[in-house]
Length: 439
Image 1 (cartoon, rainbow, N blue to C red):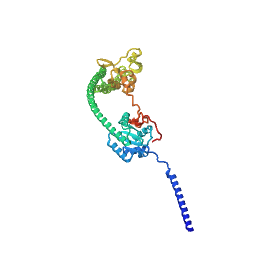
Image 2 (image 1 turned 30 degrees about the horizontal axis):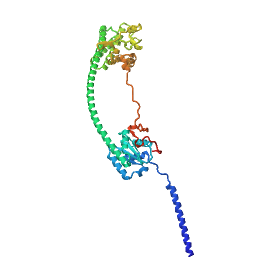
Image 3 (image 1 turned 90 degrees about the horizontal axis):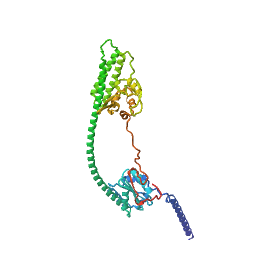
Image 4 (image 1 turned 60 degrees about the vertical axis):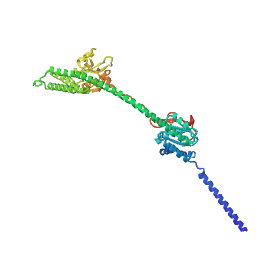
């Protein structure tokens, strides 16, 4: 009997020890696992990934508020209303407007799809952003679903958003037909205006070309008369070979100028004519110097006041009426006139019903002037000499301006100015603040 009691006591002791060990093990397990830090709430990337393949995302800490059956019903409604293309996020209770707005913007940017994004908390507060709906329209749709549970509100919002999208589509179609009618009317009117303007432009260009051609023919004829007056016999064995060469070059230049004038169809074609005339004028000057036994003059730019005068002999300071003074090349006679305070002999060309200085006869004379000075700096030289004239204004003109800076893409954090085309609806929050935490 005593031995049996001892064996019973020993068994009870071992049981107590085993219970104590189990209690210690359980305590260690709780310390290691039972009080571990809970997983972090879903971040923007997780939400965006979830909405890439589905129009509904329920965050981990809000799943208890939306049963699986309700989630399925909400997804079916969101998928059914594809024109509205609403994407919804359900989050835990207590998340404020100031956190939901930036979260929706960031998620929408990452997903890159969807027209409207709404967020609803587990305790039923709702807000949204949209590219199709205005902030006022979002708030109206949210208000009309107030009082229901999460499933009812999201399905109601999606259905109403779809109806709104269909309404806008019909309005857009009517507007498109009206716009098309107006566009046809405007195009017809613009076409008429364009045709009239083109006809007038062609008439103006033809008139300018005719005036320019008459002016150029006067220059060509004058060079031909100058050559004819000299009437050298190039076959004369006593003629200075250098004079004969210059005379032949002058005649060749005259022939080139005459041929180019006959073929010219545009103002630009007159450049070749005046280049040949400048060459011919210089060689005539050289012939006369050789025949007179004088040194051949330096080859300088033609007289600015009248290129028919041939090469210039010096630069003088001159200013057009009401204009600024500038240095221009002048022949001997015009240089003397300017130095004496007299008016130089200006080349007057046909213009309208009268005549005016070639530098004030319109843009058609730009190639004409450019050919005379092509070998002496071309437009760079001309632009300096023509300051304050009609040709000078054309040569210095240009197109300015540009594009003002613009910020494209991205989302703004300001609830009143959502970037990327999104409008903001405050929904149930009104002017509510932030309740802590963050996405």
